Amino acid sequence: RNARGARSLADRLETEIEAGSTAAEDTKLRGFLCRALGEFEVPVGLPVLVKAADQREEKSSEVNQAALEALALSAERKADRAGCGIRN
Image (cartoon, rainbow, N blue to C red; front, side, top):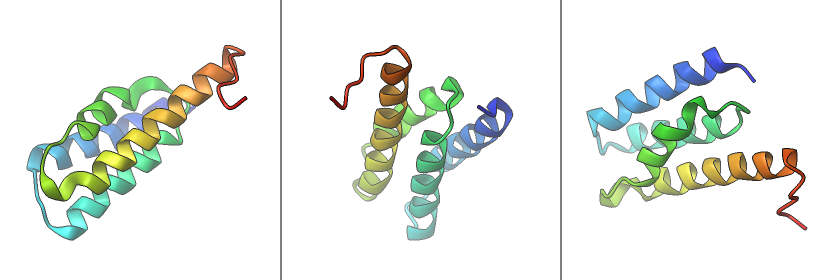
C-alpha cells in the first residue's frame, strides 16, 4: 500500500530495463525488482511490469517470469478484493 515505495522500485526497474545490460547481476536485480513490485498492493508498478514481461532478449527469461508472476499476484489480489476468488 506504499505508493511512494512502489514508485521508487518501478522507476529503478524502468532504469534497469532501459540500460539493457545482460550481465547476470543486472538480470538478477531486474528479477528481484519485479518480484518486489509484485508484493505491493498499489497499481503503480503495473506498466513497468508489463514492459519487463515483454522483454525479448534471451537472457531476460528470468525477468520475464518474475514480471509475469508479479502481474499474476496483482491480478489475484484484485480478484480477491472483488470477491471473485480465482483460486477456488
